Every structure is written in C-alpha cells, then in structure tokens.
Image 1 (cartoon, rainbow, N blue to C red):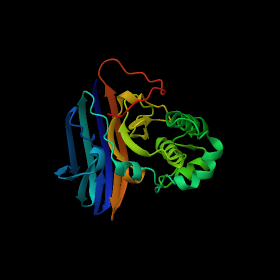
Image 2: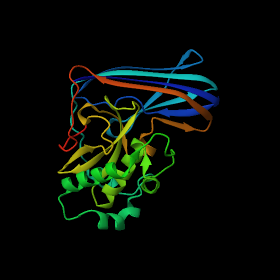
Image 3: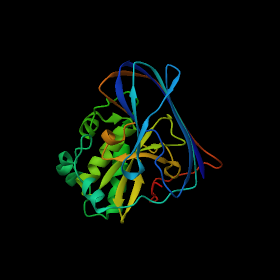
Image 4: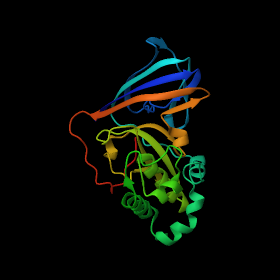
Length: 267
C-alpha cells in the first residue's frame, strides 16, 4: 500500500519566536519514504533544524521573525514499516498519569465500571468501545487545555479528547497506553488525527474510539504521553496566529476496511 500525505500551515507571526513543528512522518527503516518540507517567511525560504525524538518522532525547530509564515509538507510512503519496539522504560512511563491523561483520578471509577478480571485484550476493547459510546464527536466543543477529566464531564470533544480519555482509563487499569498523532486517510473531517496505542499481549496495539479512519492506513507522526508531546505546533516565546491549516491523506488503490475489533499494530 502506498500512501500520500500533505500539510499546509499559514501562520502570522506578530513577535519573533521559536516554533516547533511535528508534521513530518516518523521514520521507519522498513518503509520507503520520500518527502518535501519547506518554510517560507514573506516569500523567502528559511531553514529549520530537525531534532530526532522518541519512537521516530521528528521535531522541526524554527527561529522566526515577524511576518507571514507558510509551511508546506508532502510525503509518499511505500510499504509497511516494522512494528514499534517495546522497552521496559516505555512500559513504566506509559503507566503514569500525565498532563492531559490523569489516570490517577480514574482509579475508583474504572473499578466500578469495568470487569477488571477480563483478559487485557478484552479490557482494551471494552474501554475503547465505552469511550466511543459515551462521547459525542463535536468540533469546537473542547479547548486545547482540556484533559481527560474535562472530557469526561463535558461528554463531547474531538479526536485528541477521545484519545486522552482512552489513555487515562487504560492506565487506570494498569494497561500502558500512549497517544499517537497520525495522518489518517479516510478521516472525515480530514485533519491531523490522534489515536491510542495500548500495550497488550507483548505488543503495542492501536485503537481508536472515534472510528474515523481505518487503522491499516494510518501513518505515525509523533508518539508520547499525551498531546503535550505530540502537538503539531508549539510556540515558545512570541505571538502567533494560526490562520489556516489544510491536511490531506490518501492511499493508492483499494481503500482498506476495518472492523475495529481485530488486533492491529501501527507500523
């Protein structure tokens, strides 16, 4: 399967600042990646510095003066990569509460809501289905600062909110879980998408309570504890306005289907 993605961001920079972008497809030696990434400020090309983070995540750091910034990324990925590796430290880190996935606040709730005696794989599916049935997918219903607890109380959100609540509940029942930002062919509305990887049966398995896109088509961008680690844009120091974002993601040939029940790894 060959997949093609692109992202265009238009940003008005009011005060000089340092920006971090996570929009490039994560590198996987087992797949073939061709790509282009450009930054132009008031029409002039400027250079960014790439920082390699965990799990193949690539951060592009840009020092930028006031002006109109355009970011353009495109990539084609041929084949499927290797399954994500597992380390002892990952298992430890992704069990802990984090900024947007406060697992410790759900300990009592999960004990009364879910059958904790079930096998881990079944519990993962139960929690994913529960989040998908309890939350309403509604654009504009949440804030960028909302956490899993906020989402639980509001009953609505977008993909990152679904993912944060899923991650928090999984960690609360001692299943390591992490958030993954992805390109998602078939996603409607099309945008950067967020899904969850849960550690079960000695592998990282991808689940998505929104069921907005088939998991086989997803392409990893960034992986971390929650959106604090995976946001497509971070601003440090100055003032900016994100004027426009356009994301595309398609596959060549027959589009994959997904029953959302079969265990699947994000490669």
